[in-house]
Image (tube, rainbow, N blue to C red; front, top):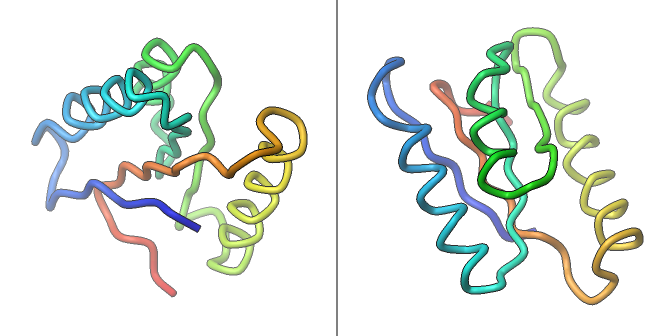
Length: 102
């Protein structure tokens, strides 16, 4: 499972701008990116969708248990691989103010 997280200690620090720039770069390089937004805020996910042209995922450590978030990531990989590409899994880009705990 390839992916990385963009995090910062507070809101308003430019995570969404950096995330959208990286998503656009990965898309131009035909890396087939997929984004996850962490938390209840839906606005940033709209920016991700604007860049990629597809709906991203959401991971919320307040409302979801860690094992449920891991399951969601695994199921999304399986679904994307079978429905969309079948040659490789999408790279996941997780934007978060807080890190996901194991």
